[in-house]
Amino acid sequence: MRTQPIVFPYQPTWSNTRINLLQRCPRAFVLRYGLAQLSKHHAQGRLLSVAFQIQTPWVLLHQTIREVLLDYIEDHGIGNQWSKGLIRARVKADYTKAIQRRNQRIRTIQSQQMAQSFTVVEPELHLIEMGVDACLKLLENPNFVALLSEGSIERIEATTSVLQGKIRIYAAPDFIHYGRDRTSLVKFNLYGQATRSERERQAALLMMYGEHDSRIIQFSLKYRKWSVNTVASTQTQTKQALNLVSQDVEQMEAIFAQVGKNNDLSLIPLADSFRSCMNCNVRALCPSRHGYEHAKAEQRSLMCQ
Ligand code: SF4
Image (cartoon, rainbow, N blue to C red; front, side, top):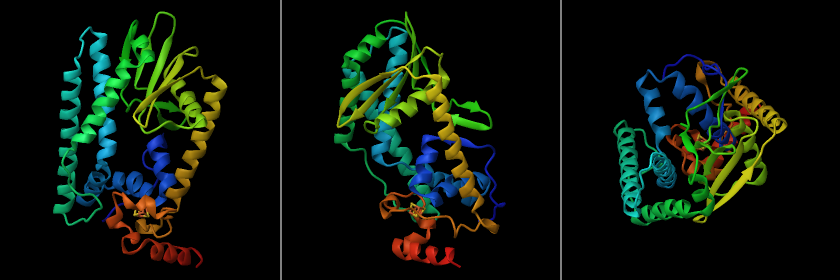
């Protein structure tokens, strides 16, 4: 793949997805946010971007749950009531479409002889049922029912960012509720209950999208049950969270700076654990495809030279 040498792409950017990927595997991070972006006008670069768009059926199910809930909330705001049957039909249709798009991406990659770890699947009925169950349980949750019983709603796209100094931050709430007494910034956490400090950090960053007296409401899904946390975050906490964001961005810049001439990635650390490689979108481009332990040992010896 012919590309220009890596520089930090466009402007420093922070999101949970970015920092999580960097922590899981610096090499995958550089491929996704460095090479794939810089070479997006080349066929190979586009292929790399397609590879990174492939999500597991589990992730697609949770993306579907979020979309259906947000559409429900928007419709509720204009007085349209959904039946349980409509919710079931929406989850089934949206999830099926998501799986079809995923299969299409996998076929595109396979047609270019770029082997990867994913295989095409059919939408599984038990996952659809799980999605319907999660939606219905939230819509019956007393805290959620109380929230929607008055006021108005503004849906916020996940791509809505905030510029803090030189850093673009993606940490948007799912929607804002304008109530009689106050404004609430509402976030769905669909991948399990975050730790207390993770929730506090998330709340502190969410405050950037509201007023100083806004409250944060986090609905978290774990083991098919919803829990709710309501927090009033302070400006000091937001400042502390922004300091951590700056430190994360410094780590990202440091990793990009390690990319060698001609985009040589040999010194970019591989994942710390083989578990990260099992569902990796770009394993076909990684030395670990010939054996993780061997690739780690080779990299250690390179680093000592
Ligand atoms: S296969 Fe493993 S080491 Fe290689 S890029 Fe993927 S996660 Fe990182």
